[in-house]
Image 1 (cartoon, rainbow, N blue to C red):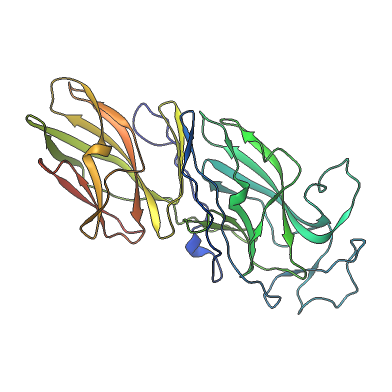
Image 2: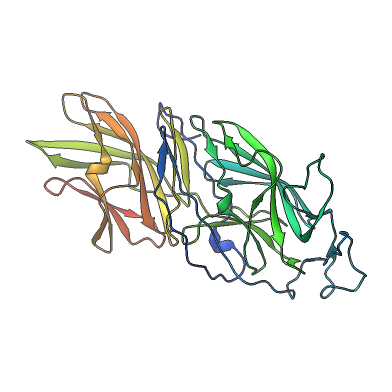
Length: 369
């Protein structure tokens, strides 16, 4: 927990950066992206999909045996190379439980099982076993809502499975309440199923998190879990900064940036409200700033730095307002604490400009990511 005095503030993690995902990618046409919608005091990000391509049986890894109609594996020798066959009910070779951050959720992937049972039938003790026409990789997942003030529903349309360089496979809801809203601070546990192509090779399986055309993450399901590249703390500004505005007289503000973080997603609690934000486009990041602010004005008043800051890229104005901000009270000896979230280029070459055009200005370079 970090942040300004008097607020509750959760930094989200991003499990593994998309740059670390193995394999080349191509994309389908991105779906229409809906604008964020606000539920109570929480902004709920719209859903989308994430796509990769191509799977070959020449990859290394466990081979999913082409099971017979009764769910048993065929005779020894079928398949490709020397890869071991994964039969009905087998655990995913090389899998170990892991926890990753996904927006406002911590996802705990607890089990991974290959089965001919369809998602609606698998792990249901009351169901009669009925082998399906294909094999599935079933993941037992616990979704923990880190935020304290709003419930959210896990976006299943943003969860995909990729095998090597293979075509991404969408998640199907299985047993358990994963499709229900997870209350503030609560958790839900259940199963997700992914239909495997015939003869699929379970080499370097990855759980994909994100939306086509937007910043994304890939989480390996076998082997070690690499340290995430994002979120990442950065230095912005240098100690106390001064700028001013002109409104019948010059008011000097002293701005201290108390923390700055580049991230692929942002979800946090702040002064009794929970907020989640859409991921930025591919090649961009979210820059989340927390600050303290004072003003040499005799009376106390409220203002938002959204109106006293803008983003420039290549000396051209690209945004005259952040994607999220808070109001602060200043003046009369009061120190205000607030936050701003900006959508910035991942390659740097951007500048935050503080102040108004007819007053003092401060220019702060945005670190490259």
